[in-house]
Image 1 (cartoon, rainbow, N blue to C red):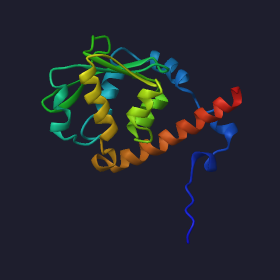
Image 2: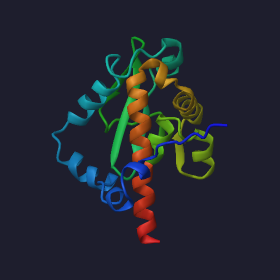
Image 3: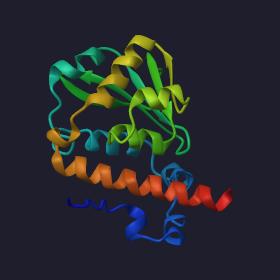
Image 4: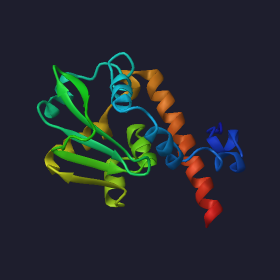
Amino acid sequence: MSSHFALTPEHILPAFVLKRLPSPRFWARIQRCLPPGFRQRLAQELLSPRLLGQLPAERIRFLQGRTLAIQCQDMELRLVLTVENDRICVLDENLPADATVEANTLDLLLLASQLEDADTLFFHRRLRMTGDTALGLQARNLMDQLPIDQINPHLGLLLNHFSRMAKAAHRARYAETH
C-alpha cells in the first residue's frame, strides 16, 4: 500500500507568508489606476484562442448576440462578454448585460479551475445571477464543465495552482481575524 502526498500551498509557504500575499482589494486599487479600456484589452487577450485555446463553437453559441457580465465584487471588476464569429469578445464594461454572474474573486477562480462546482457556490450564496437566468445558467454550466486542461493544459495547471494559492492565502487571512 502506497501513500499519496498532495503538495499544497501550505506545504510550500508558511501561513505568515500566505496571509501577506496581496488580497483582491489590493488588486482593485491597482486596476483602478489603469487607463480606460486597458482592462478590456487585457481580458480580450486572456480570452483569446492563443492563450485560452479554441473553445468549441457549439459550446459558446448561446452567447451569440447576447451579453453576459461577470462581476468580481471584491476586485471591483466587471467584464461584459458576447460571442461574435464563434469567438468570445470583451465589450465595454459599462454596457448593460442580459445576465450577470457575480461572486468574489476567489470563488470565480475556484469555479474556473473547477476546484468548486457552481451548484455549491450558488447554494451557499457565494455565486449570484441576475437578469436572464436561462442565459446565466448556460454560462454557469459552461464554466462548471469547461475542460480547461484539455483546451490549454498549461493554463489549466497554472489556474489550478493559482486558485489553490489564493484559497490558502484567504484561509490564512481568515484565521488571523477569527
